[in-house]
Image (cartoon, rainbow over all chains, first blue to last red; front, side):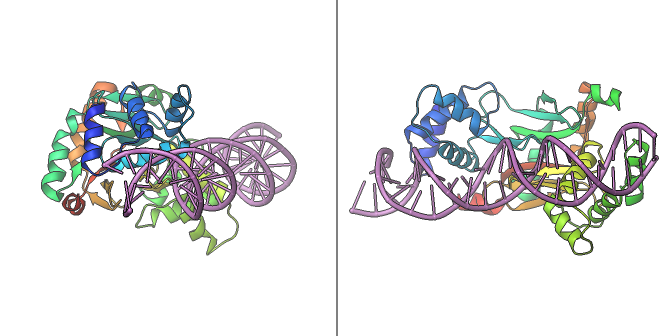
Length: 141
Length: 141
DNA sequence: TTTACTGCAAATAATTTGCAAAACT
DNA sequence: AGTTTTGCAAATTATTTGCAGTAAA
């Protein structure tokens, strides 16, 4: 989903477009990584001082609820957000070393279909998080 | 996984068995629901005053890392823990109304095999969380 | 008897909230 | 004009940590 598509989508769903929201979406769309509210705030501070951390939180929450970004909680106590633009993937997180492996999510397609058929539930399968033990840590244990 | 199996497993992996740990495991094993650290603390307070919230946190973290319980973050800002005893399932969480639907996880079996083959990653598929939009909220939006 | 675990209290870290002012539509 | 959204500051909530004492193995 591109910057323009998100802006259009927000307009369409009756949300207002503010400079703050534009900046936050811009940072998200151009990031290679998943970002926390703090990450985005720090990034924007470099260029402007006209944004507040609370606004970043409120905007991210709104974007997530409206389906424009995904949110992952990686057992670090903070939420990480990303747009869907840089390709969907599964996060495999090792519960021992906490390292994250990113994996192609096509294997989840049947699951998406299944819950749609059975429960009429539209799953976001862009960024799913799954815990487990990685290869290296299995050797240690 | 039963109470006894967890206790044995902990012994086997060199962890000490303390009354506090026994009580926490007992509460987890006998619960129908997923519990937060606070939930467990409150439950134990009814019967004893010899347990500290910090101990509950430390024990849950240890149990999770060692693979005896699963941990889910349901976008509520708190972590919820459960043993595997009352049957594995997928949490489908509606990002609009935040209601949780529990679904049979057998559809994830191929995924577990796949990541094991390709990355030697042992996934915990007992309690996976997936966000999306539920049937009722789709109608509203 | 060694080392892990606990309680206590204080600290931290992430996120939320109330409210008046500002700014979208 | 009317309603959202923002900034600010303070509050809240969940979780973590240091340390000295206690108790498993």
